[in-house]
Length: 297
Image (cartoon, rainbow, N blue to C red; front, side, top):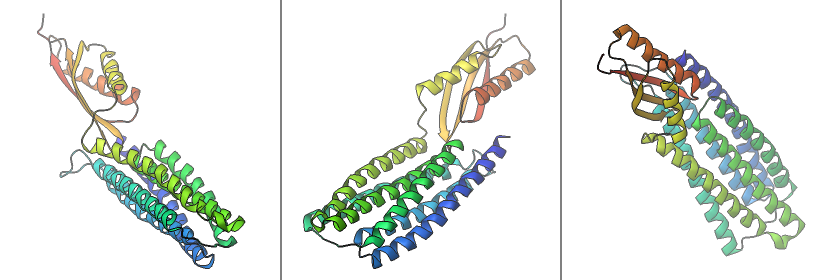
């Protein structure tokens, strides 16, 4: 049942990502044309940002396709690391894009580059903001529902594109109102680059923690222990080890039971602990329960 859920979630994640591919493709072409004919270097740079969204869309599609396939002989623990890796790539692209945008903004401020864009660039920036912000909300909602860090990270990439378009909108509008305000574009872009850098760093950090099997929060560990101890027949819980893989917790734990009971009874207790953890704790995948007997009588 768990594998069926993963496959269904994977399809939902790929569906929303394909919507992103279509939107980003149309926006990339539209922004490039608006930048050329609207005399806006900022809009041309924004078109490049949308192209980077296409790259991360492709990475996420591959990660979801491979990461949520069933375990096999060569990958007995599943392929969840592929989805984690795709999240890592999205985080790297976000941070790299933030550095590039920040560098370009500082360069424009130092050199005092001045452009005189037209209303075409202004309209293109406004359309981009509307579409990318809507795409962000759609994607992040699906990503959280299917517990996919990669999809959520890609949603933030969509929002970073919307924020960069905000910078373009401010710069173009300022330059059209008063040519002396042309530096407004660069200042807005610099602020946006810092926001994107923070998001990218957070995405990278979360992916790296999962790559090295970092344990979840104390609250999650405590909830697992409480659930196991609530099962009738469990006297003690120890050696609980939990890691995150593809957005789901995998764990193994030892439960102490009465050494005088039958093997079948011990097995039933272990299955009850497994069922309790998988139903009472969110985002749980595989649960391995070891039964340790006390000395009988």
